[in-house]
Image (cartoon, rainbow, N blue to C red; front, side, top):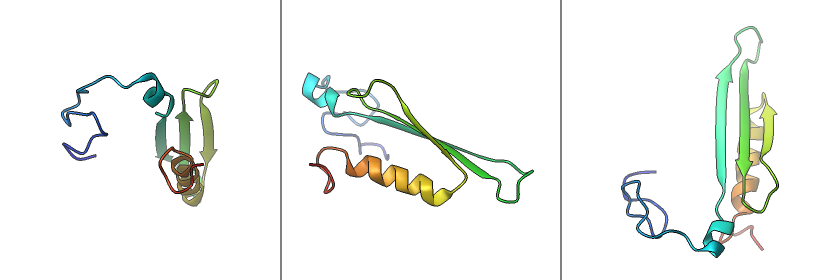
Length: 88
């Protein structure tokens, strides 16, 4: 995210201009993608995708050796976000 491209209510400098409301906080989520290379394998790409949303009991983690699966997990997660074409 470029400087000044923060979410609504963000000052763009890493500080929030206003704390999110409880409703907004329920719709926030975090996704972390960690990738690494295992040179001892022919296809050494590895990734761990971990996401959490306030409504969930705990984090969801997917570990894969397929970059396309990483993209599919991210796509499903984004489309489930409120305000996207895939959300209900």
